[in-house]
Image (cartoon, rainbow, N blue to C red):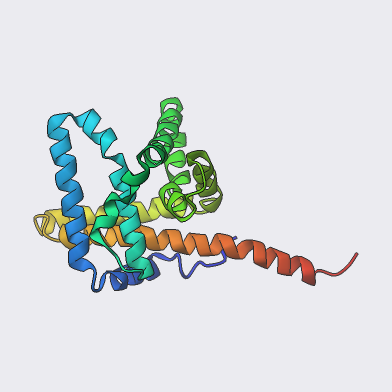
Length: 213
């Protein structure tokens, strides 16, 4: 049962994500530009090798936007922090995609479900660095229980927004939308995390208030 539906509503996440970007907007654009430039440069060298080598950058972007939404002093250089534990975060980046691909090879729909089941793996791995990649994925699965269709719907809405912005503004609006997407997902994670942490407490209260039989 959802305990925090207001916080996880699209409208609320829309507002809080824009609010979080105030004072961080130009830095966020710089982050997206730097990551895009590095990925493009790596692709020119070798698409497959470059993609693998730079996978921890995706987690670095996650670190940055978590800093943004938490108001903890966002820093552009944070995108390179995962390279300090390169092997660990490379595996955190690879493992969920491998499992989602394996499911997709069986049937498309289970692959899509798996993708959303593991959607919060990066965030969990960053908040609880002592967890292995497998444990972070398992935690993401538990947190996303009851939220997979919700996030799927949200990503469809975001994809439509990006498509419309690309067509009608010749891509100019993407300068605003792409940073917002990073802020949106970070806020979504925090809302789902708050809900998952509240459920055991409310279950415990319900048990304590239950009549003795």
